[in-house]
Length: 489
Ligand code: ADP
Ligand code: GLC
Image (cartoon, rainbow, N blue to C red; front, side, top):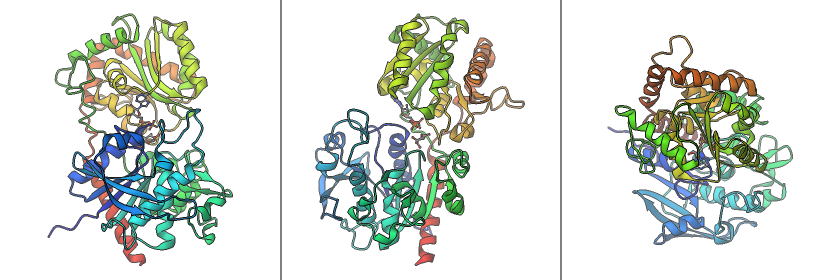
């Protein structure tokens, strides 16, 4: 007899294609769809931002939620479907009906009421996992992502309810707020403890989730080890070591329908591992689009990134004036730190024949860079998983990475002995600008040996990064969470 699969409420603060600031948006679109395909009864809970309201004008009200705590307004749940995947839109115009980025205001500062905004998301998520769920549907597991859902496991712990899982996509963002939010969000006074939701005299959503979720996961096996170490744990390493038995590293997959060079409608010239020749035409098209000289006399490096300290692109800025000497070209698409944005813009002005930069978020250009670049740069200081290196591998664009987190779990250096069969990219040996420079020289040398380059591309393009295997691992984790929770009750 088939064992029943746990039902799941998947809680996220972003979801591609409607609201995306980074990889979480992609994961929240693809993982629930894969779980649903595997037979899981799954619903996605997400704030009803303007983009979602516009995408689902016919969403119908399925629950009216009274104010659940002193600082939380009343809200509604609207039901919609995306390709058959059930969505629950958390409608609270006072908190979510704002243009732009889901976390930041127009000046790039955190929205001042983020504690209430994501406190509401967490509170409602927990409520749906408690007896008498206003939906008339109660999941077996509430699965939250990052700090924005982090209080849900705490509510489920203090008030009772179903099992919970928290996935850490980036431990650097911890959702820390003042003591006043404890009562404001409806947490009990005794939750203010070192083994409660308190963290360095603040209320931390992420710490609360890590403390109380039945099971924890992060997005690669290497990052699961790294965050237990003080160098990567951003203060949470001791708690993660304490909860190590409950923690898993599950490598993200990629949406192989959205990221497929054979069917990608953003590409002027589709291609595949079996017929890779047209990749070259995408390089010429990208050079032309970005105003670079159209030439195949040197390799073209690509970058698509949030421009933050995490991504290590300051290392690239430090050596980029050497690009003409390599020689190589560079295309950068990104946004983030204003200093780094300005640094890349002035670099492009200094080296117009070698560097082209577009500041901003542009999905179509991102696909064209993956296809048109020869090699993709990701010198991240830490990288919980990283999706762009997997997109690059699939697009035959060998990545250059630091061996950290998911980069270490996906990129095999083509120059390590015995890597002929598996080598798919380049690992930077160190975290200095010099180490990056040495890697760029190595890429250029390797690229000039075109038969060898073609082998590396083939190794990269033929890897399987689909969501099927990770979805199975999440199902195992849900089962474990349900059985641990049952034992505790
Ligand atoms: P992170 O989530 O840390 O930003 P990932 O590599 O996991 O890093 O995911 C980043 C995602 O966001 C990828 O899908 C990438 O293509 C996309 N992305 C990042 N910056 C931009 C941008 N400026 N324009 C378009 N897409 C971007
Ligand atoms: C985070 C991480 C990134 C990861 C993504 C999706 O934004 O920085 O490495 O790929 O989440 O899990």
